[in-house]
Image: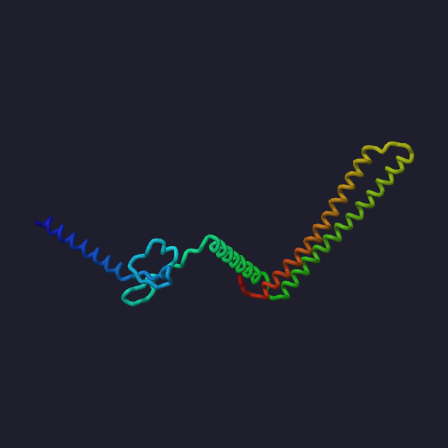
Length: 203
């Protein structure tokens, strides 16, 4: 008898729980727009409607309790992701600029410092380049003297000339590289100044 009573109590509890769950489920309806453009309320979603978006509405209050946006086509989804990434990058850049600079004058000062540093480096390289060219002229003159005298140019002298030419090429390339860095620095600081002035991110 005790076992039968327990079974009845368990069954009653299960039935009560099931009725509450069913009641809770019935208290929410789906609201969506069908293929004709009509707004529809239903306890179930038609096949394929989930990807088109819908809302869950509390039947007792008429309030929207959940809103599910339509799924975007792959092309639009990729474009949305690109915009979100660009916006995140812009905000991170703006935060970096405000951490580095307190005013537009700070940016102008930083640009001058960077360009002056590169100017000094270029001047130093050009000084080394002038010395390297003088050395090349001296070695070339020795080689010419040997040829005029009918003597073979020594391998040692040839090696020195080749090293001198290589050094000159390297120094010339370094000058061009530093000048390119100056152009990049001007462009970078101009972008930073504009971003600092704008003060927001609109993608």
